[in-house]
Amino acid sequence: MNPALRLGGVLLCAASLAACATVTRGTRQNYVIETDPEGAQIALSTGQTCTSPCRLRLPRKHDFVVTATMAGFEPASVEVESRVRAGGVAGAAGNVLVGGIIGGIVDASNGSMNDLRPNPLRIEMVPLGAAAAAVAGEPAPAEEPVAEPMPEADPAPQR
Image (cartoon, rainbow, N blue to C red; front, side, top):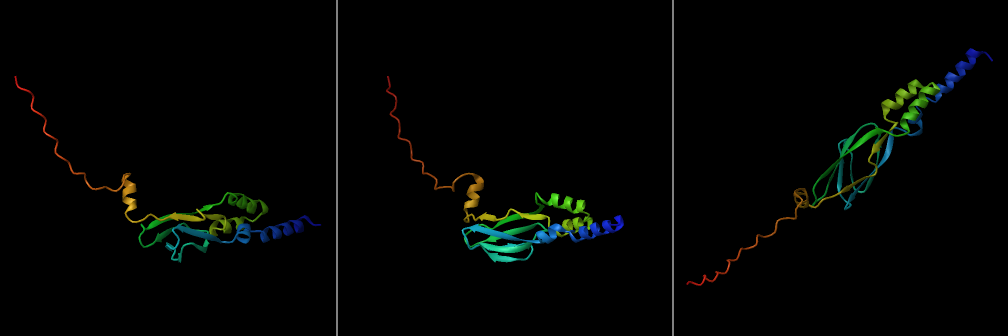
């Protein structure tokens, strides 16, 4: 077989494997948000909303903030990060080795090599008023004790 024809076949195969992470993992992932207690209203900085516990299908590409609110509890916000997963770098190297430089660029730019962390996200809701006492490191102040007068001492005997 002609070496140029063989090289063309290899390049065609490599091009078909480009953007492996995009094909195998996709650009979105399942994301779980839980609160204790359940039933908190969840709002993401990206515009999505739900009531906990909830499962969303979110793009892997960008960081975002999750805010949980519930009557009788302090609002809580947590930043979720989009980071290259442990195998993402190996996948990018595989794209380059197989000849899919374009695939590596696609995977890196669309977030398919990333994971959203933490996942699942668990938020412990803090009752109103409890946060201030916890920050001070002391229990809430109790009623001041009333000072009672000291009994009078017997006068010293006189000589």
